[in-house]
Image 1 (cartoon, helix red, strand yellow):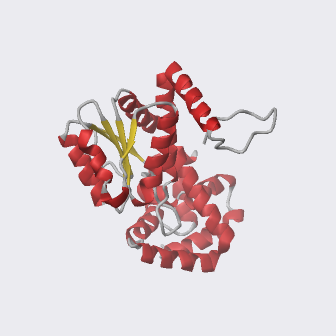
Image 2 (cartoon, helix red, strand yellow; image 1 turned 30 degrees about the horizontal axis):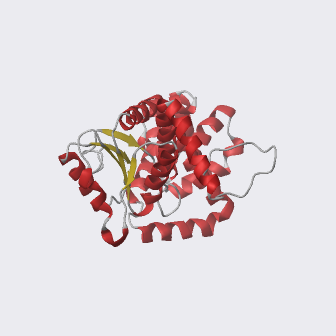
Image 3 (tube, one colour; image 1 turned 90 degrees about the vertical axis):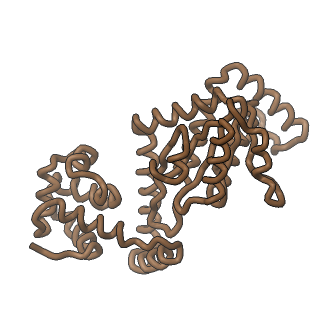
Length: 302
C-alpha cells in the first residue's frame, strides 16, 4: 500500500486525471473540489452527493495504491486537524500555496468554497432553520441587531434593510462603548439577532446571555451548533466559514440575513409596500441617489 502525503496525493490525482475512466474522473473531481467534505463526511454520504457509487470511490483509492477510500478520507482529515488556528499561521499557509499554485488556482478555490457554503444553505434542513428564524423575527415587537468585528457589517445590513420596509429595528452599536446601552429596553416580545464566528467575540456571547435574562429570544447566526452563541440561542442558523484564505468568510452570513430580510418583508405584506414607498419619498427629498435615466428599471433603494 502506498504512503502519500496530502500534497503529493493531490498533485498525483490532478496529474493522472486525464487518464482516468469517466466514472473515476467524476470521483476524482469530487475529491478535488470538496476537500472539507472528503475529510468530514461518510463514504455513503459522499457517494450520494458526488453522484457516483460507493464502490467507485473505493476503486479511485485503489487506483492510487491505497487499500480503500478511508485512506483518502484520512489524508484530508489529518490536514484539517493540522491546519493552523491563528490568522498568522493560516496566512503563512496561504502564501506558500500561492507561491506554488498561483493566482488563478487560489481564486478558483476560494470561489468554489463559497459556492459549497451557499449550496449547503439551500438544503432543506437549512432552509427550515432560516424560515423558523424569520418567523420568530417577524413576530417580535423589536429586533436588536448585533455583530462585532468581522460580523458587524452583517448585523448592520440586516438592520438597514429592515428600516427601509418599516420594521422596528435597533442596531446594537454606539460611540464611546455605549452600544449595549441600547439593550436597556429589551424584554419579552423582543428578539436579539446575534452574529459571531470562530474565533467567537466574547461581548456578543455575553450580550446574548443578557438578552435571554431579560426574557428576549435570541436568533443566532454562527458556524457551529455547539458554538458559545448557539447553545444560548432559541433559533440557530449555521453557516460555513472555511476557505483557502487565512480569514474566515462572512459571505454565507450575509446571504442568511438577506434571505431573512426578504422573508420578513414578505410576511408584512402591504405594510412593506407602504413603508418602502415612504422610504423612497424621504430619499428622494434629500436627492440621495444619482438620477436614473428615463426608462431604466426602478429598484428599491440601497
